[in-house]
Length: 444
Image (tube, helix red, strand yellow):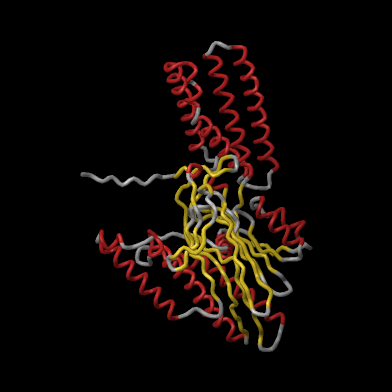
């Protein structure tokens, strides 16, 4: 008897329903309504305080993600860290033993849950330790009030017309979406407090890429290591590449923003912050690490030093616009061919004229996007969407040949398959066309 292990490169999310679960120590405490795999799942956390107003924060993740949700305040328990270390070490020993019976005793929560929880605790332990080192010579203090965040795995979701279609392997993401701190200086100096907050914020952002690298990289085998990203690291990579780093305010945004070439969502976020009196620090063009292309930017409150440290790539609307046009072109081409095979030349000619008109619209749209879009990857995303939409619609083309009989279905299926292969090959060979992953990196 032979056992064949099959691991698909993608999963058809639109065919699968999943139920979100919240577990505590492996026990299900709450469930949500069933939803399509890959669709948005909103997580909301409300912290209740004594003699203070509650604080709420939300984050969105694709269904099918696996995250450790942690809340912490004050300090990190050394006892808890020791327990986690023992648990993770035991799990590692079992996995490396190759003992099938022992491995069967491990659950996903034991393998992944403990690992991601340990990563979050490691982040806060380092954050508090480094903050203490920064604060000591300045006479500052920072207290961590109950905060919340997630650390875990998120898949890549491929969308068509705004709906999740396929899920492919993704990556690890740390999202500390609710961090509540209070700071003070011994001498009460407000300017020093603002600088202290900025220093701790930059350090916290750096830890968001440093902790995953610490966990998943092996210093003894650097060729196999990967690279994580954070707002601070994106700025560092941009500076190392020779890009200018701008500090943008409401006073200079009219002359500075035209030099920034981020995606539309990031530009809008920065512009809204500037209109609210905030300061934005960012670089000029996209930077990349394996599996991600985008930008890093800081939004700072100049009065209190509070800030948001973000990475973004946005979702390029040009990809979806291109996919709609690509699907429409494929449909018209299929109908024109079928009517021609059925001997209805007049109807086929009408459809062909519509196809030519749509091709002209597509050419004009691409020219306008290339000439006037402020998003540097928009033209490539449009072409990538065009090819993707065309290929997806053509995937159903063989069904259209059934009215022609078996022979007709085989003939049209072969014809449509050949055309689809040619278009897909052109898209893969083109250095301009971009994939959905390159056009869709959510803002954190």
